[in-house]
Length: 98
Image (cartoon, rainbow, N blue to C red; front, side, top):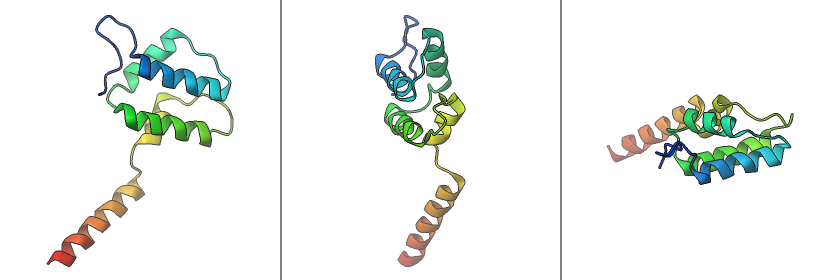
């Protein structure tokens, strides 16, 4: 499920908890408006992928600065190198079948 803004305008509690956890981990305070903005910006990312991205952001963040929505998105998206490797593996698998 994605789309973390509820019909009543509130934020899905699972998403809000991820935000609060990351903020606590990095020693930063959040506002409700900031949580809502991130919920809108990341609304197309499935919750399980977000959980993993938030974990990565917490463990890789050296500066302690809270990551932007774009930085969080980068944590969950497949890199170009990963995509190329996956394509190569699929190609090799198809070639073996032939």
